[in-house]
Amino acid sequence: MDEDYHGTGAKGPKKKNIFDEDVSEDAARNMFKSSHYEFDVHYTADPELGEEVVHDHQSKSHLPAPDLTSLATPASRVRPAPENKTMSNSASFGGASRAIEFGHNRSQSLTVAWNTQGGSQFTPLSTKNAQKSDAMLFSSSSSLQSIDKDPLLQEKKLGDWSSPSSSLQSVDKLDVEKMQQEIQSLKRSLLSARKDRWMKLPVEDTLRRILKGEVFSLEMYKSLADKLCLLDQAIALHDGNAIMTAVLFLQRTVTRHIFTKELVKRPVAASHYLTYLKAHFEFPEYINTLIMLGRTEEAAIFKYQQTLPTADVSVKISKLNDCLRGHFQSDPVLSHDASLVQESVDLLERQRPIDESDANLEASGRSALFRDFPRKRSLIGMPVVTTLYYCCLYHYDLGENSLASPAALRKKYQISDKQFTRTAIGARAKLRQWKDIEAILTTKGWFGGTKLKAPIGFDKIVGILHKNGAPPDILQKYLAMVDNLELRLNLAKKVSCQIAVIDALVALKNRAELEQLASKLDRYSKEGLYAFDVLNTSTIKWK
Image (cartoon, rainbow, N blue to C red; front, side, top):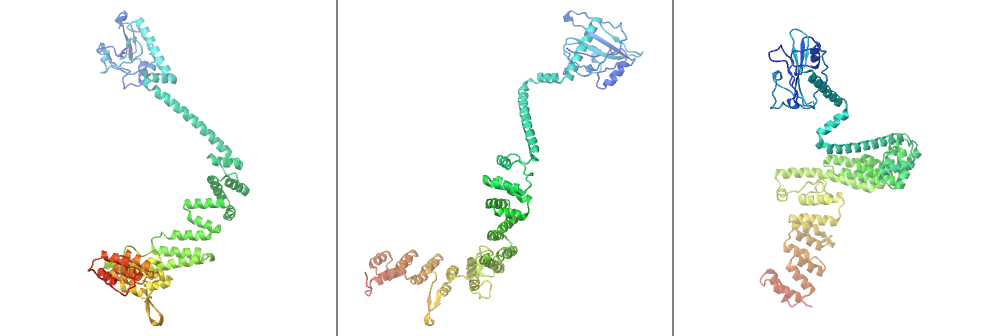
């Protein structure tokens, strides 16, 4: 039903609606307490129910102002007045009409009018209907107040309005119950942890908690015996996490000397601790622990390996010198290794000026050798044999007083004849310097004579020359120096040197295979003419 609050009429005294937005609750109370307001109630009967319409504007009674606190809070949502209802004159006062549902089919209008003569008057339209209206207003107000005061009723009312989301609310309640159970479980765990923190549990119980991933505390193990007992039992369980927990606790709570002494007695614990340090990149502590455990060779090698990735040559040389003095030279057992490290430092000190000079010469473009055979990478950091190959390729003719001299490198680093021969022949063959190769292989014989000698064997020399594209006459020269005839024949076939193949067949006196080879050759080629001349010779005794 619609409810209108209005005044006495447009022509009456000056009116003011207590439910306007600009009128506060305190102002409305003051209006009723003041004697300058007239309080009129008009009750509109419902003809459908058989009620008579009574208009009584004459009877007025001065009654005390009613308490309208409950009316200040609307009971339900506001909705516009129906279009088929006829609004009274006073309902249009203020420019708008408002309706509030109270749960009955009556329409009341409550208007406070300004009385110029003073005093507030309450004028009912009908005594019977007015009393009925007051009772209904009071019951509606009481019900609203009871709903506002009782949260359960509010929740029920809201639940009626939002019935589609009741399933979601039930799910939320289940989630809340689960969360409450988890909170209680966490509280119990926290209380248990706080209680056990200050209790010295047996070592077995503490290790059991460590293995199960439960909360544990090691603070109550004060004595060294308890700490060692914890470590020993953890080792007996063969659990890495328990061992490392005990080791780290011992390392934090005892002196360095005691920790090292006890760690030496327990190799399993020492191995776990070293692995832990290495995995966590605590390299200084790792090296110190190795030294204290008497494993100086491992500490020296690990320190040397750390210096190798250094890119800057000067820094790398400085680190190698520190490693040499701190780990290798101080230990007599590592004297041989110390000499190797010293050679590594010397090699870097030799490579640095050579590389800088050659880099500048290549960049300038003045050297034809660097233009025809450009460098592929820097010389710094290369091993001794690679450095020798580099020097034989670019600085073969330098004297021994030069840093880049191959002879000086051979003497400094005690390079063997086989290593030098293989490396030098490979470098000179790349440049097609056949005379240099012959000079390398030439040695002095008895009575001041000379002869060719290959420390690595002439078969290896032939393979190196063929790999670098040596011509057939050069290959034939060194194939003839191979003493084993079967090896010479197979090697000559491999490098496709036909004249050397013919000579090997003649040396083996194998006429049948030579005739078969001659049939495949061009009759008037150099190889073909040579094969037929050999076959026509009568001085050779064939098999």
